[in-house]
Image (cartoon, rainbow, N blue to C red; front, side, top):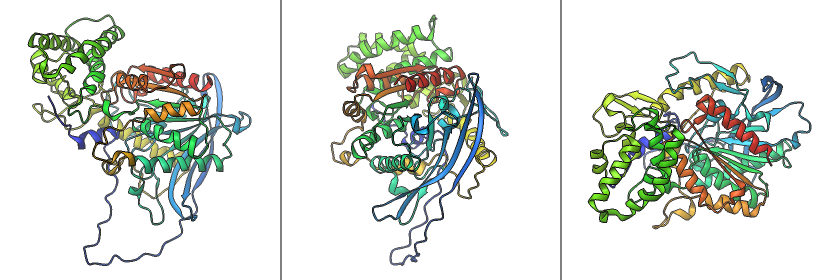
Length: 511
């Protein structure tokens, strides 16, 4: 099988919430003169500081929350972009510069940071069912997050240009910042400006990125360490995209995604009780599947059309044992399970589709006979609760009133994203940032890397992430790889939230 994905669907699913940014204004017809507008100086950047407290592990944690706009400027001092950030600084913890500082962003590309903000690392978290059930309709509720990593590090949540309330200024347009290089340049400058304004140059510094945020992190490492002389202590990767060749989207002629995603298919089938055999535990299942995927299965796919018929039958039987899909179906797919089809096929008999971002989630669809799903159950069920609680929190607890539209996720940014400058030629290939991270660890002998993946993530599979990082050249002694139950945002599963938070705190404090 050699199939191309429904790219529009896949890109929308990766954003976390299918909410598009406003359409750009219509260009004037040819021959018409666009009215010239006088450049207006931007208003004074907003800055609101509030003070809060919560109980964390028996400790009274007091902190200041600062919601502010930070303007970037070009070489002539003209403003080019306004970044809206929310930062949290622990109070009463001594000299601020001695505290670690972590910059946090999600991915997309085109996503704001609300998912990590209210899902994992911030002092507040959404009150969402841990069992992947539907949180229902408003009103939703926020609750204190005792597991917040604020106990170990101050936090800065970054919304890239065109997401959240961040936007271009002056003669710039949002889409001028939509690209691998352009995005990384602006975020690096935002980090430099922030640590200068807040006098945090000598603080231990960490970068925490999720999904496409893994690629952004890789792009940032040389910009920060080499170009701006900003030393980093650690990189924290949550369900990261790092090498596009291992992701299950453009699989034409590329067998690697089928191999690296087999364990995630097995974990999802196990969760839904679709496996033909009994297994003592998920861990026992995955240990066997990982060994098979990287051994016999990889070798069989490498044989291509020369694989003998009897061996094809044996492979199909093993895949049936690990995924619950029928042998007949697996043979028709040429032994290659395509993620966008898998989520429709696994529970087809029940008339349900499972989530691509989190295979624990399920949803009924109108077309039970379709080859591909109409949407993603995970995004549909989790997007509204994050956006509604953030809007309420911003105004009622942080005292911020902004009339601009908040953009949680921008499909426009995703679809217009420009490739790296060195990836525009005819033989460009897949984007891979692991080499940049590895070089960063050579430039900085103390830089460490932590990576977390979810067993039920069918996009950035935990096994694919491990494969990429184990082939990156990063010293294994400075590399920590952990996996947890749950999906792309594994922290929605409460036990995973607590375990992951503790692991991140241990990573930060372990330096």
